[in-house]
Image (cartoon, rainbow, N blue to C red; front, side):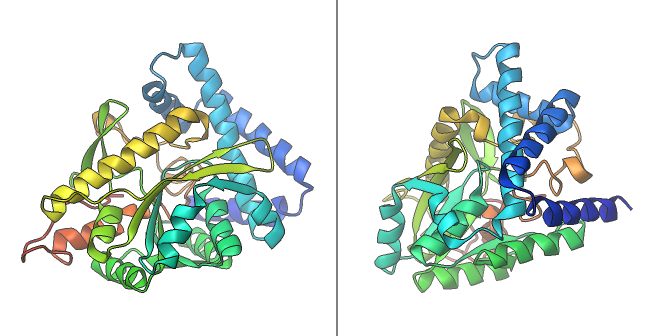
Length: 345
């Protein structure tokens, strides 16, 4: 019943909000954000806990203000998500102003292909729609099937309507399909700032240990594609800003697993710099740091990984797509598998 209610709620929002005048939709988003913030549910408390690591000098009052701004940014994402499918091509082009787009176009023009990796910042759906509309290049991403399935199917259809190719997360199979696209000079985009599995790559993130998926780095190493970190942040409506960073260098020495760790740390450093500059646009309402894992149960249902407190919706943390393949030996080096981790859910 809970799954059906969640699916019905999202369906109603998708139908209703895209028909509202834009100022009304923005005002509604702010009201919903402020109501959730005042109730201080698990997601809001987790957001403040995460922000305390990002801004360690913030006072309790400053953290409260920051989390309120964060919830408003988060609901801006949802209001845009519910309306993005009816935006015109011109509106999409005008709503995103990225720096460093030449890094992406150079990688694609060279035939090398590119793996774009993003944290849970601002609106990655809009960034993806801009790539399809402005640059004219479709891309592939990965979806892990979560409940309720009707909502999952709606998100997949929504993203495919925006020009994304959504592949099911099936371990080595999805990794192989992504690798094929990259070898043909294509584009893969993955949200990759969170991997709670014991096998995820350990990185230093704001001075503390966290795990991030190995999939993006392994894909780049396996195919020769450029690994491009991207950070996003909101300006005043209707513009979202972003930065496409230069390709992450491939270490000259080391095993594939060692190279993947170095490259994943470089990605984490880019993410950290972008989040530190715009902390209220980082929509991380879940556990991330290793020290937090296991302290308490992760919120489930509408406030958990598949619910409205996850900006990626049911297509979440897809950056781990290649990690299962790595553990199974599908990207083996010298006959052995790079055991660099996979997403645990």
